[in-house]
Amino acid sequence: MIHETAIISKNAHIAKDVVIGAYSIIGDGVTIHSGVKVDSHTVIEHAEIGKNCRIFSHAAVGTAPQDLKYKNEDSKLVIGDNCIVREFTTLNRGTTATGKTVIGSDCMFMAYSHVAHDCRIGDNVIMANVATLGGHVEIGDYAFVGGLAAVHQFVRIGRLAMIGGGSCVTLDILPYTQVQGDRARLLGLNLVGMKRRKLSAEAMEDIKTVYRTLFLTGIPMEEALDQLEAMNPKKEVREMLDFIHASKRGIARPRKKEEEIEEL
Image (tube, rainbow, N blue to C red; front, top):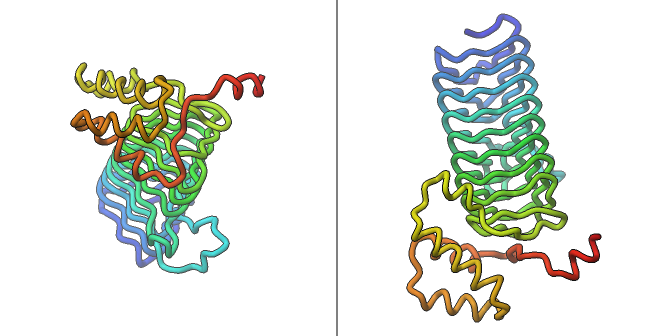
């Protein structure tokens, strides 16, 4: 059902069972798949919306990047199935750098959260209220970004990582870890998240070994990595090591004692 006050582009492709509320605007280049419900006063442009998504009122989905270099080139936003986009959320489409912003399935974006251009977000990611991503941010599956957190452009956040509320994230965040603060530093492992995802006791112990070796032994990072590589790393360890090797910004580490004193 499409409300009589909604404005729908002739170029939009909308499944027959899609619900669109009053005063919403569906612009050019939009595809909305079956089972989607769009509440009132929502704007959707240049986006493909997967099945069974729920988009609440006043969201801006697929709108132009907040990038001064963008000159209205063709680009889009792609959202997977079963996502929830709450009130006043903004999800920008890509720029010519990659051509698209991509969001996986089963994600939730709470009110006033923001995803900038060219981001890559995995499945089952949650962004709490007013959480903000700069351009080109990458987030792995099952990650959580706390309320009022700000993530710098080009930062990578690993699978099952947890970003504490109010954090300012300027470095890459290892999978399975949790961080907090300005600038965000490691607090330890996301043990609760790993248990919820039913990681095996062996996998969790391997992840603990990585954390202890990298951050608690006091040995240089390169030496610690060599030790872990020599252990014939299994899946989760391999994931963490590959994440570090691929990092261009550097990875967040535990806060030093002197940094804690300076903050106090």
